[in-house]
Length: 140
Image (cartoon, rainbow, N blue to C red; front, side):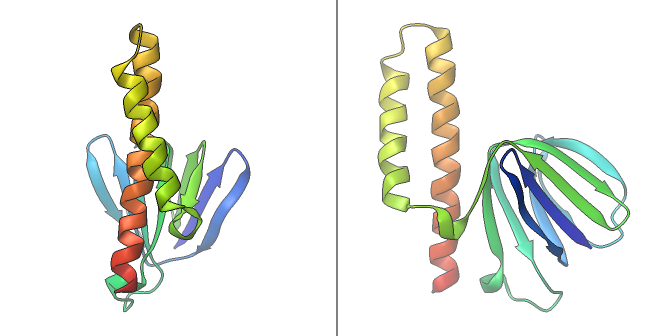
């Protein structure tokens, strides 16, 4: 099946894959070839991609996403998000520092709007760190 990961900046990933693990509001779902048609919301989280049926977990590719829309139809999985980063693009120390700053913003928020913005940043950087951790495990 074809996975298309599309961001506001353009196509991030477009290739044939065997399995895609997607973060949804109801929890993670795995999509395989010939999956039932589906349209659902993607939540901030990690997308896991297995290129071939025989590929071990250590060869999976991961992307951090900010949330968006998932469409499964025919032999295509299309994920539309504002932004997505592959595990190789994530600078772990920068993400750790950004998470600390976001937590400080949350703790010092003057109103609910500032708190919500800080929580969105916390979600974003937490996901990035999760994907970086998955990359480290993959290397072992």
